[in-house]
Image (tube, rainbow, N blue to C red; front, side, top):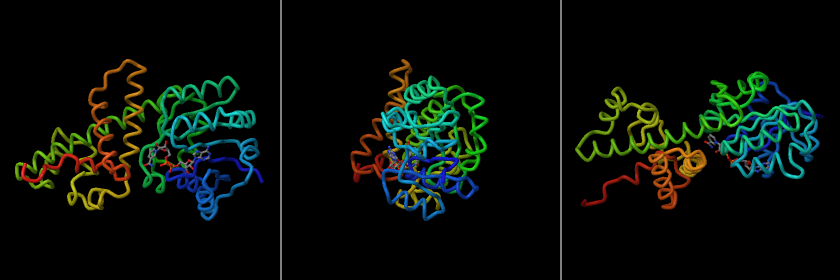
Length: 299
Ligand code: NAD
């Protein structure tokens, strides 16, 4: 049985996204290199087939949710890749977070072969993926966006057309660079207040209603105990990992080099997250950078 949608990459994000398409009534065939992830997809009501090329050839839409640029390039451009199998008229949507340059490169090859391809990275984390409340930032043609939107709406709440191919990735890189910088800045401010004897809850509440307010202070406070549901109050478990933030800041710095842009704070944030990751915190939520700024005993 052929499926309308082939979904490749059933990891932390892809599995719940693909299952939301199934719940919305789409015929979805799910694929991953890890058999256990495919089993979870099938247990959740999805279908699969051992033959990915045949599934791709029969699909109307192919969606990928893979780790990084090299995986996306290999999946689409490889000798037995998606672009070698897919039937004319199939819509291609890559939801992975990758370099804007890589998104443009793959989309250009797809366009040359007559396919419409979109980059559609997401914000909202695994919680948003499970709840179907992701934000999609989409790069590609207006026609392609119009075709994809009804499907993206089954996985997300806010669906934006950012511009041409690569624009979705550019927005994602800019947003996450700003998020990394704002998180470290918020940690510094809270630590400074605490060193002056302030209650971090009172300080955060006032700053969240003053000109320093930002998303970290409003919904994701990095100081344990300030917000009951924030990762900081749960041992920095869950949430958005340090290594994922490090990857996104790396994409921002890489992009700044290729575009000749100045990102001094983005580069500093990347270096701080790199040190934090190497200290063993790679798997913790990114707000755990709060710990790196702790005052040492007796200082
Ligand atoms: P993940 O590592 O959990 O999942 C990626 C999946 O792709 C894995 O299951 C892996 O086996 C599979 N895979 C790799 N190569 C494959 C191939 N050739 N064919 C089939 N399957 C293949 O990663 P994730 O957390 O789901 O993230 C996916 C993407 O979404 C990344 O680009 C990440 O930066 C981005 N993202 C993640 C989050 C988050 O909170 N986890 C939030 C926003 C965006």
